[in-house]
Image (cartoon, rainbow, N blue to C red):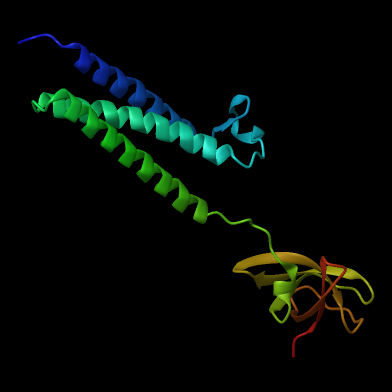
Length: 185
């Protein structure tokens, strides 16, 4: 059995360094950590930096490239492939892994939503009074809007009391954040 030659040490170095960093970053990502301008931030201290995802992707991509370059290059070298061809194969595998990680992150980003409810989407929906709406006053109603049950402040269109539990119909929005409702028939 012969010892390792210098190219094998290079491949092992890339594989171990890239693999270790890739695994650590993946654990930190899953645990809610974020890489901001000041290094690693706790999940509660995220900076609203528009390119934070790109920085994370770059770090993940770089470590994935190193890991795959080392592993595939070493495997090809062990398969008695000419060293420059094993290096080319390692580079190709590294580039493919960077592309795959980019694809995964872009697909994950598509799953995000702003979480903002447009109160106007509640118009013409039915709901239930949550807190009694006094005549001339404000109460609260529950309506399903944008696929979620939400509670909104509400006033009576007809200026009559609408008691807790009664069915209502949303007719308009007042002042941008209060629903105008009437009793359902």
